[in-house]
Image (cartoon, rainbow, N blue to C red):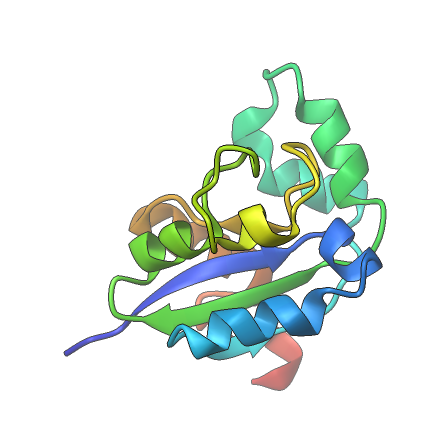
Length: 143
């Protein structure tokens, strides 16, 4: 049985609030293997490139300001049906609407600062992993 990969980013609010270890533990105990992980502070250009798909949306500027406000933790996660499983684990974007027990319901304070990013499709997971970790899914300086 082949495992799939997805990208997760523990966002600046997660790091700032000291929840990185707790959220990472929840991810691991639900069966995800962490294949690569790094803590970085996104530059404006890097954040804009990653969120390019949202450029014309009204929340784009606020999103970029938030994602560049402090360190974040991009990770490559592996598990059977990784994208779907991770989306279920994190819950909907708005924590007030997220299912009980999901990461966003447990830890997020609002829709704008919602603790975690998860790829929304296997195709986007592959692109997003490459954006942060290169084609191999491993940080360039660790290969």
